[in-house]
Length: 192
Image: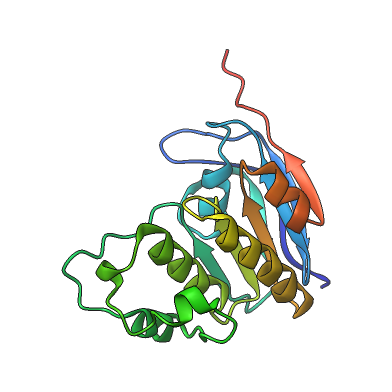
């Protein structure tokens, strides 16, 4: 089997279908972008692939033994949680190797003492560096400054070159163009 993930006419949602049917194949070392306007179900599709949203029709086939990592848009609240950046990385099995200096120097700080952008990038890094074959990223450039986006762009290409497959949901067209091998533009669910 040469693919990590394949979907055939996948329709996903929560209480009701929220997507058009999606045919998708992701191979090792490939970065596939999902774009489209708000409300077409991009995040819902990632959630369905990760086993979190309901599959209404179609199917999802994964390589046997596939290790999957999911980065969601919302960063969990950390106020009052005495967890350092280094401890967060350890929880996911991620390594700090390759972190930008502006964040590597803050690894021993508590998460609630980092800026929103630093916390976002650190949680993103924890997912990216986790031992996974397929990485699902939901709007990873949200809350990142130019330096963060540049570092992420470089790292995603390196991660793909090392064999990970990725599905990236993003509204950031420059980022999608820079990192994705191919892009699927999604359309809304037609009611009526």
